[in-house]
Image (cartoon, rainbow, N blue to C red; front, side, top):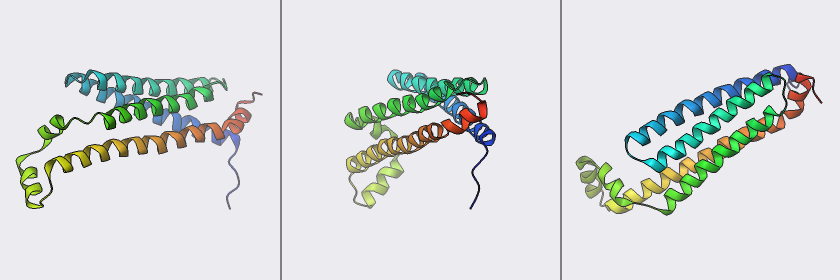
Length: 166
């Protein structure tokens, strides 16, 4: 059995994870926001900009913690919750407003032939793919961001000890 980590090591791990996640979210969300804007998907661009904001908030929290401000942990947890609320709201909106016209454009002739061969109705296939995609996105976001929020929250005592604040 491993001994518990020293508070200083826990602090470094928290900061490293926050920086990596924050930068990753910021870069990916910005890319998707620009892609959505280029495709004329205004609501999608707004959602991705909000997600990018969650990444920026996470980076701000890491800077605060590194500057010996324990309130930075609150920013780290809040960024996970903001990300989660935005993505779950977006997925719920998409799941309740299925538009088959957009999905039909994505089907190639080869895909249509394969579906006919398998005797699988196009509409059923498209609905299944659409619903599965947004359900998987919501599930992955929930598991990852809830886990990360708990990770930051549970390390509060060790980070406080490493920073030497009460």
